[in-house]
Amino acid sequence: MSRILITGGNGMLGSELKKHFDQATILNGKNDLDLTNLTLVENYLHKNSFDTIIHAAAYTNLKLNDINPSKALNLHCNIVDIFNEYSKKLIYISAQGKNFKSVYHQTKLQGELKVGKKENNVIIRTNIYGNGGLIKWAVNELNNGKKINGYTNCIFNPVSVRQLSHLIYKNIDNLNGLINVGSNIKISKFDFLKLIAKKYNLNSELIFPKLTKGNLDLTIPLVTKSYSFELQEGIDSLKLNK
Image (cartoon, rainbow, N blue to C red; front, side):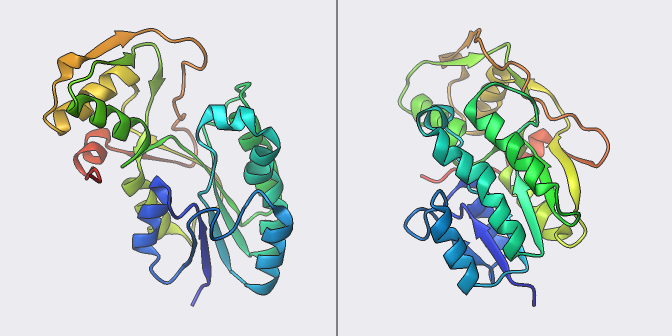
């Protein structure tokens, strides 16, 4: 039986992956192993052998990356050298693959370069949503009758963590190289929040359109070696943790 390690088990994607890979070893967070401490990581993997590592742990909060650039570099990039040495296959959850200036995106791109050194490795460029992050915030605010803003000029084609985890589970032995995973529809953050409000029978009139600066095109290009999922299907499958 293949020995699998999943990092970021307490995150949105990791929580879904755990449901599929019930025999895998899970690193849920810093209390299990501080992945920014590369000495600890190497010592752990020297004692524990794995065939496949799914690296779902990441600093997804952009400000946290800016505050801790060296830790972000270790978590998103430098750790890959160790994973490459101590596994046969690494599945690396990346971002949009675009050359944005933020520490988060730059360290992810640098990580991709290291992942690509092994032919059997997998880079998954995607933009995920699930029971946390943007959705959890929006639902909590709307439940409390608060007004929120949705960006009308920020476009993405996100995929649910349930859809992505199912893809990885079903194709884990066949995936390799760089693949793009996104929804079949490009949508603004504003319109996406409207759909979420509808899903949970919340007042969408509390969502107000707003323009933002910065990275406006967060779409995943569905080109060669890509997987597309129905956006509405992903939203319908949401079950928000209370």
